[in-house]
Length: 125
Image (cartoon, rainbow, N blue to C red; front, side, top):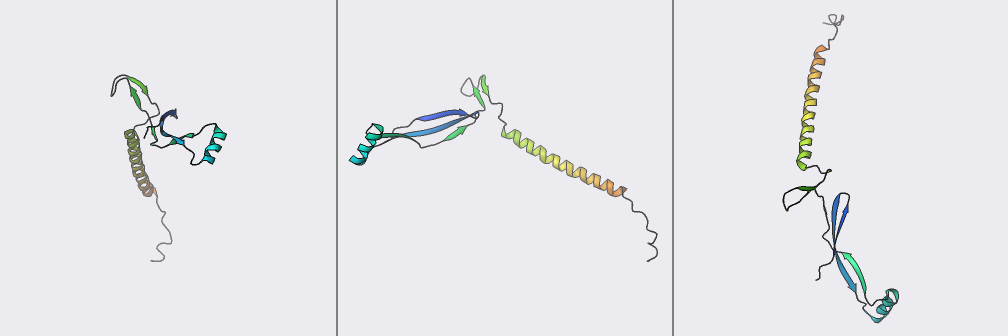
């Protein structure tokens, strides 16, 4: 098996990688060979078929050295998973604080609520 061409595309701030295979299709009989030669002018048809694997790379940083050194490129749109988890945790904490503040306000409102005395209350006792 001969390795096929690989394609690298840069779009949407990501690197898209595709792997292809070159297929040469030979005609199975004389009639197909004659028709193929008449249409394309060649004895065999060549086509490019994507075989995979396909994947997308989201570059975060590109360094001058293999694993360190001067930063040549830094993706400004990248947000680390730790920052996302910390923000979710903060949101949960603020929901807890909101609930506790609601409970305090409810308790104060309940204490301030005074029901006037009913003058007919003593009649039915």
